[in-house]
Amino acid sequence: MDRDDNVQHFLELIRQSRRGKFKIYIGMSAGVGKTYRMLQEAQTLLRNGVNVQIGYIETHGRLETEGQLEGLPVFPRRKLFYKGKELDELDMQAVLNVHPEVVVIDELAHTNIEGSKNEKRWQDVMDILDAGINVISAVNIQHIESLNEEIRNISGIEVAERIPDSVLKEADEVVNIDLTADELITRLKEGKIYTNDKIAVALKNFFQPEKILQLRELALKEVASQVERKIESELPRGSGYQCERFLACISSNHEIARKVIRKTARLASYYQSRWYLLYVQTPKEDGDKIGLAAQRHLINNFKLATELGAEVIRLKQSNIAKGIMETAETHSITTICIGKPHLSLYNVIMSTAVFNQLLNKLAASDIDVVILS
Image (cartoon, rainbow, N blue to C red; front, top):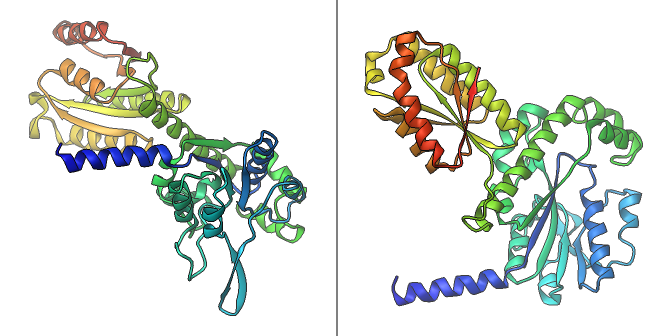
């Protein structure tokens, strides 16, 4: 590293230390209480002598939420004329000038009015963080870019306003605001989310139990993955804590492979964990040495694993045990899942060396092995 690179590295460390902290409340839909919780937190901060101000808040006329605004200092909104109408926006420059310790900025995925400095509100938030101001914000799960296709499949709606996944990665803390489908629908019927004229339409479209359940699962998974990333990046190596990660190991045996894939997917789902599918291709199974039917089954199994959320790893290696262990070490695997072999006595004897080799290697590590029936 030359002198200029050293200087740049040091400057980057200084900037990181000066940058504001970023907290995001995330929810499965409108009406779960994200804005209410942000204002509750602002009230608590204010009582504790913190200089907190409201940069932009959208109460949607909800009385409970409006009640939480009482006593909180609020930045006046910036007025803009667009297509003959007076509209208002977050006054980012005012926030930068006043430089409060903490600012609350709602609706992170909002698109700014033409003529604003930034196209998107999340970009305003990045500028405010860079100025050393701490930000509390909120977003719904349907506004996350990488989930766009899944959201469209669930809701039948193309969400136009989205934030890049990198914005969530910038957050120091991501908090999920969770409600059951019944609780959310009850809130809707009581008029706590939309006005009475919109309730019937909402119940027929977005606010259906099966859709809410799927969105809720997405929100829970997203927050779990953010926590996992934070643990991996911030906990020191050797701290004794490791996130659960599963490795399903399959062969070209179609029936056993499908069972291993499905059961590992269930385990990973239960632990809200990442999981991987490994197929070690030995020289015996290279090229056309296995039949077309077996090749087709393998491709279908890879596809099934991908659909169930796995990352598929295909490895060429003559030593199966070595291939499994190398993959486990590279991907920080905590649990290896293998199928219960349905083998003749001859094959059991021939395979014992491989299994013993794997067990010997695992004995020196903290990796568990699960044999799935």
